Image (cartoon, rainbow, N blue to C red; front, side, top):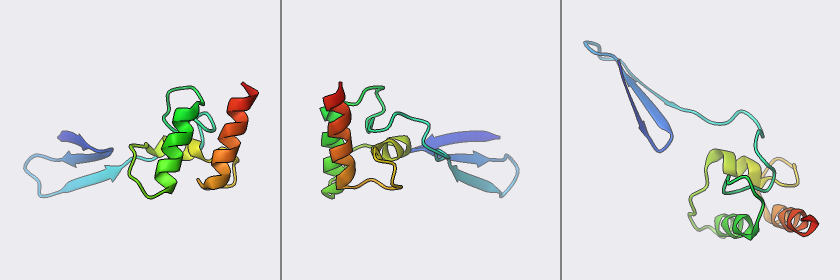
Length: 93
């Protein structure tokens, strides 16, 4: 069997078989740090910038865990209210 990975999707190919399985692995829950959009272990203005770019329709590189972390207020999604929540975390220091 060979396994290849591309952008978080894993493809498993069995030799001498016509079966190929592709799986995309996604986090199952918020295991990261709330507000840590770039997953660097810190909550900083860089996280605000990434989330603002994402919400503005730009395509910054944010991982699936980063999007989970972006839900800083815990309401189930990433939106403008999370930017305010991230600012609050930064202000608390």
